[in-house]
Image (cartoon, rainbow, N blue to C red; front, top):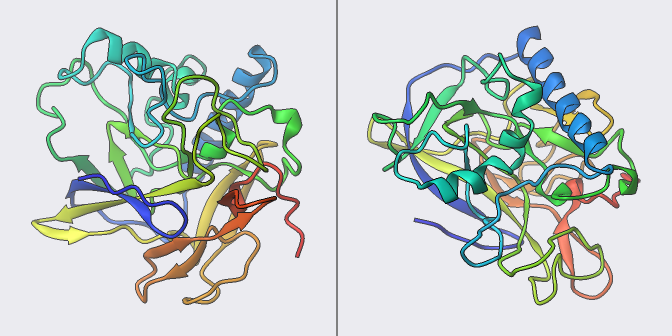
Length: 289
């Protein structure tokens, strides 16, 4: 089941969840892994005219983009996908930077977190072993120039955008641009991200099951906040959830939480006209009070 709602609702995906426990603080190992991933993404941009990796895979059948789909990691592990789909998966961010992180395939995971599995994914018959991920890419930076980021020391590049879980076999971009059409897809503060595209972005949040019971990850995972890797490669801990009903922090992605710290809405900011994108993840955000 896929629910796509811009502005106030997320994209709901259904998983099965295996048991695990989350730790209150991230071990140094996780921090070192994540910093290496951020450095790998910046190394990618150095080799690609200063442009960051694709946040999501292309759809070669339609010529558009798989902006609302999770990307298999590695690209070819799914035995129910053909070689064409594997090649599409290969150019999305978590796969395109793999050459820089060979030897550490689960660099995006937190070993003690719960593991979420897509219902119907071929986990019992993978082509190759699959990876896990907790850190996600800021999808507003899809194909975006590092030099064009207003505040690289503050803008999230990677963040704990899947909550207190690891995704088994998949990586994601969160939030994401909406780019169903053929052609380039790039953040535009005062217009759609592609001609004829949507006038807004969208955000995703997984929903799963633990022993048959529906489970939605919490957004707050470490010391009342989340870990973020910024565009300049810095690792920063951000406090979030200052007000359960209407948080005002310039670094809080979400505008509203449930009483158990599940996100209800993401905070969006409107530019010129009616074009609206997630505030904390906009490349043009100056992070001024």
